[in-house]
Length: 283
Image 1: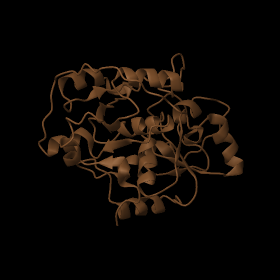
Image 2 (image 1 turned 120 degrees about the horizontal axis):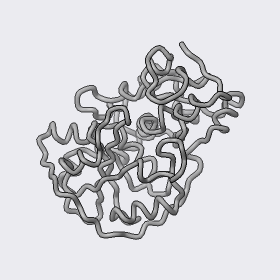
Image 3 (image 1 turned 180 degrees about the vertical axis):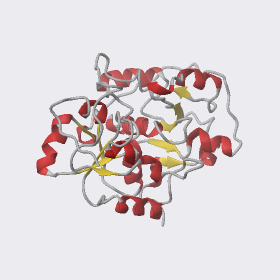
Image 4 (image 1 turned 90 degrees about the vertical axis):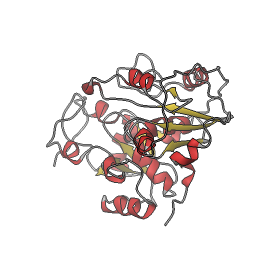
């Protein structure tokens, strides 16, 4: 069984043959949770795929918002990605150094701002290096491009929409965090209470990746994972996680399987779990 919509994923072989293509732009979207105390920008400078620029989700965000890396306004997104040398004419390829973790966030961001010509490098830098493909420490100096953003509100949910859905059940809410965090029996990485949003289903994002190379599971295995989690791919889906980053991985997987368009709860648990007026469940 093949993916219904394979355009969102490219192989290392595909990318290796197009690094000199002026119509392709590669972005390193590596992000580390603050608790890891790792510098994504420094690691990019030390080692990245030829031609890649660093796409920092903690820079390309809404300034002044206390919630982590919330979506910027369309005009700011256009300004930031244009400065990275990305225009509407480009096919954008996203990767990160952990295999597949934050790259899907950039994939979702480009799509929410109307740019569908975007894909994720399957397995990211983990698989790229496993295939013994070259990297560089040469930092790119991109020539600015003009980018026009068109916001698609159906791809993002806000807190009040999640709250209303608890009664309306207009969409399935899928939580991409690890089972222990979802159940509230392991420490939560973000400040706030343990547990999950009542009524949500748990599909931990590592479960849909190949354990060693961090590539996306084949289509039949992906379908089985969604089914085992109780998720109906024929119905609307919104995905949540800790801060709206790894939620984009099940959204990408659902897209590959032909699902319409999964939305992301951008505030996720870093917003919901910190408040006192939002219900939470454990277990």
